[in-house]
Length: 398
Ligand code: SF4
Image (cartoon, rainbow, N blue to C red):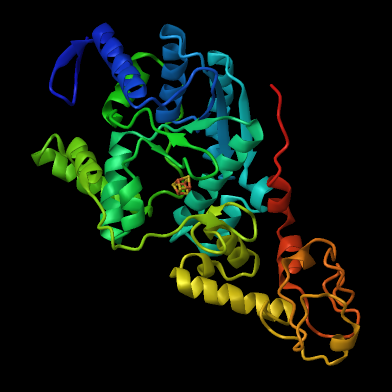
């Protein structure tokens, strides 16, 4: 049996296995992806990429003595007829490879399954919701496991598609980082892609010849995914230029951004504490939209989303952060030193059980003196207490 490799040479089955594994080992060592004693969460979906990743990382960890601890981490998006079946594969992989497994679901994190989201929004932007929620869910799960890093099964084809998608969207910020082999070093947790230079075709061949147990059905909500168009385009280009995938990755790596281009500044979401370049992260905006029956809130332009969120908070709380209280009685009764003559308090300490000593705001958000102003931060915090809980994740022992 001979395996025709995308890079041109034909190898027998055993030599293909060895070349495939050692090329990944070279990528790991060259990019210094792992350090001894680290715990690595492998993002496991039961599909071919993550199944091969789990198998190969375990094999290389033993063969080359990396000295890392590997765990499987799965996200259950709540897609009946797809994810429930693929998770059964992950559970079998857990036994086959002897690796611990943690499954975290959208339902427990967000109170929504993808089935329910699609019911509300239809099949147009479902993957945008799913992608944003999955990214955060993986980080949340990894924090619960107290791992040092997440390894994902993104392969060379995926990265080339992402480059093309970011070019078409004109997204300079993402374009700059999408070819990096390790990302998120300034975020919740670093993520790495040991398959960055590994072709999808070879992953399929490896899984097939090794008879690995993986799930190959496509997501029932995928036909309209934007990525599918980028994939079809690259497949067409590959027909006339076989090295197209690796060329696109190298092009992405070679791009540099002019110094005077303003890029998004990373901060944290004021609602849930997750890394975000806006005051409120995308997942919180999307969740707010879903909970309010306004799903388009999360998929519009960022500045429009922020304005809409602000308006909604104002409607909900009766006053925005900066709205001065006009109730004259506050002037005399409020003892908080942050109050001005206009009775406006800007102190964030109102969030924490009235720590500033202000007697006019109570924890129940209503001014006891009859003032109609409320404390919007307290309202938002209590509404999204699920994220508050996850900010201090429980430890999980295997
Ligand atoms: Fe989620 Fe879309 Fe992927 Fe399905 S195809 S798992 S809906 S991102």
